[in-house]
Length: 311
Ligand code: GLU
Image (cartoon, rainbow, N blue to C red):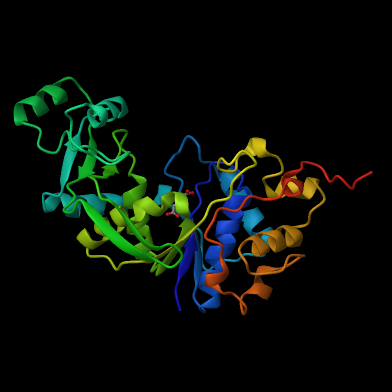
């Protein structure tokens, strides 16, 4: 029995990729007899809105997915994230970082700069000398807060990928605009909500080792991971709005019912031969070993904006 969750950011309509991941996460949890919770990752207040949240909830429900308890919103839990930062800070595991994105890019690509994996923080502010720190403070640059990571790399098991090995860098804990950072919020919330298995898109696979390390440092129970391959558009890029009928509303406009969409998603996950389906019908037969390891590229007809059979 494993408690699972779906944790979308309410920044737009869910597309087929999000819905497919939600279905997979729900099936993992429900087939184990576990609870399933919905968490809105609405830390980005400019992009998130109650309307977008409501539309996501409507689409999940229309697909036949249910969740236990109230929907949790990260925007209402800043005190928990701050408490975690304070706990780490008390152990000298937090430092202010004044770098801009551009400076991080430049430091990481400098010819004699530190060797850092793609996208990882090169550690510029980790041991800033006090004079330089005062200078930056005086210049009024608001700092982000970063974790002083204790390992450089970590491997975590994954139910679908086998294992994930990735760099553990000094992740941002609080952004320089005062907003708690995703990596911290996700770790704090997964533990607070008793999540045992995290099922999500494999674009986040390389974040799992960082998140595990953060959980370890906070003394939180580790979660198990299952990263689901993404859905790709016709160009081989991540599915995007321009690719056609990507949302449930688009699919409805193209003449496809929610049960038909669910059937398509289930088939793409290796859980049904196709044809209309409801999530509840798939629980008993669910077998995660049938989830294809490669990304799903929906057939052109699936993304066609209008039903070609319509007169
Ligand atoms: N909120 C993230 C997203 O929508 C997912 C985070 C997670 O599942 O850990 O991409």
